[in-house]
Image (cartoon, rainbow, N blue to C red; front, side, top):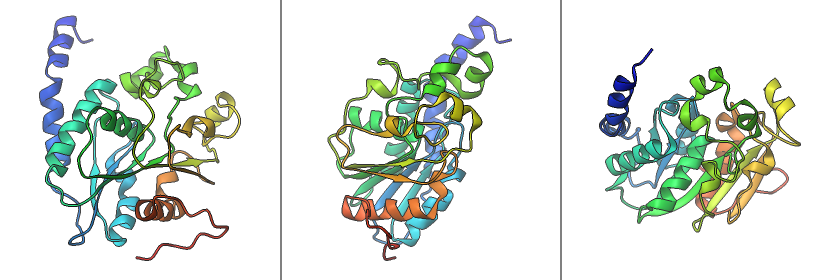
Length: 256
């Protein structure tokens, strides 16, 4: 068991540790197409950048430069993770030429919203939030205080409930172009019991909706793998290029 003194010492060192992690995460951009716009990708809670690799590959094929960031989502508080993101953006994107877009999954979207509320890059383009708990998740409401849950998901996971003062609900509405992609299928038996109405197994569709969003679309996919769906990737590209999703009955794949 960590002693109080050692816990305080470890906590005091987190700014340096997170800055080093930010530098590592952004040391090199992914392979890019020359002259393309840039996209920062940010994964969800308990995941790694590998979860966003298929989407990053699709974006590169469409002509975007990508920065697929890896961050310690379960180890730190929301404020610490937002500070990490600020450092990461300075390291990887401060000198980015042209437009800088953001594409996120789940918690990644809440971190980006918090970051853009506090500090916005001058070259900000469009933002796509995939399965974001914009108003929190009822699963957290039911499991917060459970030792196993809190050990697995950490302090930020425990702050993703639906209470008015939870992390997502402390962030104001956006005043930039943002599209929300929600999922409507579940492979999570816990979600089926604890979530109301239509949901993706982790977040209810209603919770993904965001006041001030430019557009919204519902995809038949589950929370765990929604960011790896080809249809989602095509909709992301469509929004980044057009500022809206493709709501036609049979959306066509965007031109490469």
